[in-house]
Structure formats: C-alpha cells, structure tokens
Image 1 (cartoon, one colour):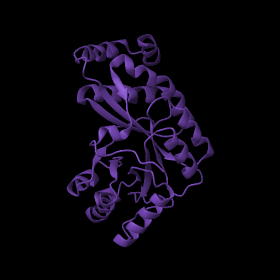
Image 2 (cartoon, helix red, strand yellow):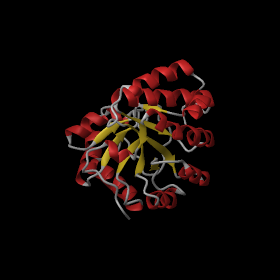
Image 3 (cartoon, one colour):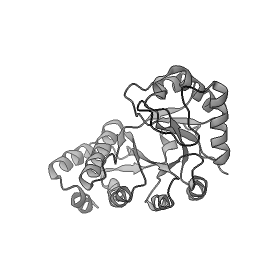
Length: 254
C-alpha cells in the first residue's frame, strides 16, 4: 500500500514527514476524512462518480435531470446524500433551479427548500452551490438555518467566500455545521489533485479530521480511484460526512 502511495505522489521527503507524524498517533487514534462529491445531477455521466471506493458523500443539485435517480442509487448503496443548494454569488452567475437569493422572502426560502427536499426526502443536510454573496448575509442565512433546525438537517459550508457567516449563524440556531477544508479539483490536472490530496492528509493528521469537496469530472474520478486506497497506509479512514457531526445526525431512509 505504501509503495502505491509513493508511486502516485512521488514526493518522498514530504511522505516521510507525514509518516513520522502518523507514527506518533496511538493505535486507538484513527484520523478521519470525508470527501463530498457535489454538483451531482446535471449530466448522465455523473453516475460514474458512484463507482468511487469507500464512504463517499454525494451532494445533488435540486431539480436537475439526473439528481433524483442518482440520489436514490447513492442512498441504496448506504452513502450519505446531501442537497447542493444554489445560492447567490458575488459575480451574479446564473443559478439553477432551487436557488436562494437575497431578493427572496423568508416564505420563499422555506418553499424553495421544502420543494428541493420533497424531491430527495432522504437527504440529511445541505451544502451551498456558489453562494459567495448569500453566505455573507445574516438574514438569508438565518432563514436557511431555521429551516434546517426545524427539519433536523445539518449544514456544510462550502466556503466559497472567506467572509462566509454561514457556519457561525448555523451554530447560533443550533444547527450542526462544519466547513470545507480543501477543494480537490479546482484545476483538473494530476499534479494539482495530488497536491490537494496531500493537503487533505496533512490536515487530517494535524486536526484528526478534515473535509474535502470535489466534483464528478472524469479526471477527478480517475485520480481519486487511485488515491483513496492509499489512506489506510497513514491510519486515515474515509468516513461518511455525517460521522464528523454530532451522533444525533443520522442518515435518512426513503
């Protein structure tokens, strides 16, 4: 397993350092990571992401062509399922169906979120798609978190803005919340994805857990299929996202 890891990373000095850090972990300490594949549902080829090894979490864009059918497949295979809710961005990019914007009222927020969950009722939480503008606004985030609290759902802040207030507001309303630590595939090159995966490993060792977001690109799927099996060499377990939240959060059944 270690040989495979070295083959794919080809950075011996860094790996020796990481290995030494791992050697100081007690046998009882297993560091954990969660990998969320979001932007699921637009393309038929997104189905290939479901072949990734291990406890991947999948987040589906609401009301897209393949979101419901692929979400059902993921749920039946015991994967955590989220809704990837489009939120208003600073650059005002076009948002898909189920979007939340600053022009909407609280009632419109509730209706939109309820319709999205009606399509995939076994989803256990949401993360934001875009949202670099909306996640900075207190009132829309408060409305979002009140909906999640009332429906026993959790929140993952994709952190599309360093000024996001989403997690802070979620915790204020008693909503279980985490934030993304690493984007794995902002660039679709082998070199970039490997480097981001190394960063994910470093964070998991340093903090005992870390969360990554990636997307159902063919390049990403190919690289993660190779990299995920190397985690066991470093005493790192790939877990469903819900395992990094309080025990009360559990996966829903259809």
